[in-house]
Image 1 (cartoon, one colour):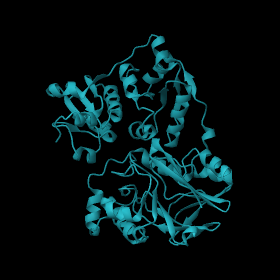
Image 2: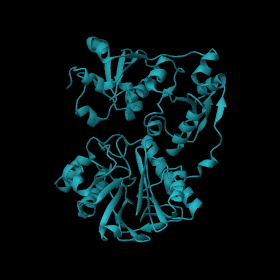
Image 3: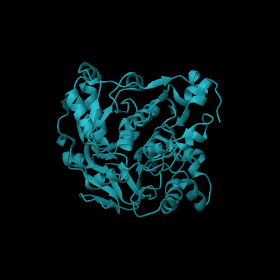
Image 4: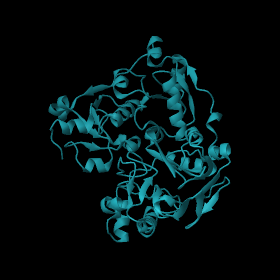
Length: 454
């Protein structure tokens, strides 16, 4: 059996190629599908099957384009409402890849149509070798139960409880677990950075799989749910009808700085893809910084949405193209172009630059009374330790909660390590806040310096 995991760090997304005897299946493909075509060619495989474990909310899938290029059939859990040709699958349905069998389990809870895929390899004597759990079971976590339009989180959590205990945990302890996401995904709350696990390990260590009654599980799963990004439903709709091929996107234009400024004044957002330090040192006023080095596309979807015209600031043309691709993976297609010459081109045109002040934790500690300390991490991170007196405003909800802050008081913003705080600083400044300071190194630097933690 050929089994390969493709991990897309920008979206914390895992997809899979499974093959045997010249035939292959791709599970949960990303939007740009060339990697699967190349991998199949290299291994002498024909992609005959495409499986979606559910209608993904956090990225746009390439299932339709991959099917058009290969002639493969698409499989989705029964009740998906998908409008493209596909096979709706139920418990016990199987696909054969030569001697390898893929058996479907209906595992609703994260979504109603969610399925898991049990892989049986004859080299293991016909016993289950692995299970691809989609967003039902993660490593160290389970899927959030609030993504169905017509069901409450409590109703989905009850379904999830049964799916986990009556389907997935019935598998042998040595079965390998391969989910669709890793650490940082917004589809869970505390996902491990590990790329796989076993049923036995998850049974022992996953907090959501510990012995408890159904209603206790429901309370645990629905307490302190992070806000659902608004673009999630849009991506579900994309995936229900099937996304257009990426080649249909128009070429990325070079936009003269003066024209970019005019478009910004007319409502376009300028998205700076550089890291925090160069951005803070000089950037286009009111631009939003989301560094390409982190989970760029997910945060762009969460804080900018899918309906704004965007103009990119990038170090070079290659970086701009990469940013454009990553944005398309979450359904952001209204990218007009990139500022010609990047930030240097903007400065050479004689246009103004803004600076975001930065501070170290050592300099911040003795003057905390001057600032509102803004923590933009997620609630589980906050609960594990935070700076005394800090205010919790998670980044994914900051656009709606920043009006609770005193705009006249200087604000020092931190996250875990500095990536999210730079995004938050740019959002605050774009909204008219003054005296915004980025805390270098974030909470990790604060704790490493031995400063007080609550």
